[in-house]
Image (cartoon, rainbow, N blue to C red; front, side):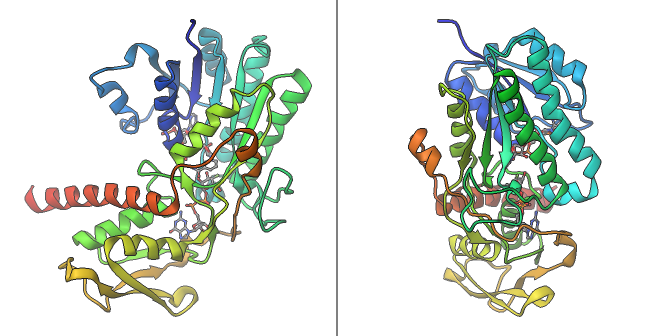
Length: 365
Ligand code: NAP
Ligand code: G4F
């Protein structure tokens, strides 16, 4: 049987790396796009090449950028993909306030450029398209639980750029009969999550505190609530959406939400640390209450390990996100394999190892 061909924009990111693994397991020929950078930016996919039973013959990496239509056109023309996954984006909400025009160019027009290339190459009958849409579209939420029918109200240049992408995907489906769909994904994390997103900042920061690399972690809005899943569960859905007979948009979420404070408490619990939050606003602090078996020589009861710094607050915040994945569960028979405690455990264990390694290098070299 002829192998399916897929191309992934955003290969070097969290989701791109997990999706590449999944598609290679499914015997696809995978093309991925990486940006030129002054430092090597393939740490999330290097293991695919390093695997002794290398799938290298099915795995091709190309330079590219979503700002460059000619590059996108040529990649699609050369590979004639069965499936295109657009996971590339300036994906940091806070950064989007500082780089609004760049964010709009890559996230909004970048999506249009891919769709235009598929259309102009007359591939509408062959190529299926997945767009990485986001729960940030709901922003100032209009319903307690957000589903495919909840109105959008984005709250950042990132959210607004993704609103364009969402609608241009729907529009190309309706106007040109393209198999194009949006996955409206709620926050999803993993040990491969970028280090400046809040979950990873917490798991790394707490790891650094307990090995003695730092004393305290500075955070923004601790009361914001998110619906967090595991990236591995969510990339499975991205693939599944393109295997359906009819293109449709789906919400992917766990249906449970926790505050940033709750996430910190869970991570501390995993480490055997009881933490209490005192005070409010910028004066709020997280204090160590008790440490199981006194196992961390650098920490003692009464230590303040969390403080709030206003520089991490956003000009307009998304206070709460909680998804309703009923449609995906019913139509795609999806259920996540990981819960929040599994996620915390995997992320904490991975970052603890990294912090211990850093400490060893600092102390010995
Ligand atoms: P990520 O780790 O930040 O990865 C983003 C990817 O896009 C990286 O490979 C990055 O390349 C690439 N990229 C950035 N600018 C580009 C450009 N100008 N041209 C080409 N590639 C570019 O994001 P993620 O967490 O995997 O998320 C994947 C997608 O889902 C993103 O579109 C994000 O907005 C969306 N999304 C994410 C979540 C979530 O919770 N993770 C939820 C909903 C939607 P470098 O590696 O070189 O930086
Ligand atoms: O982890 P975050 O930066 O993720 P955010 O803004 O929810 O965006 C992520 O999820 C979206 C899906 O909903 C994606 F579309 C997007 O690409 C990205 O992957 O922040 C989560 C919450 C925010 O309310 C933020 O204000 O955590 C709060 N927060 C509190 N202290 C912090 C911090 N966020 C960061 N990054 N750093 C802090 O110190």
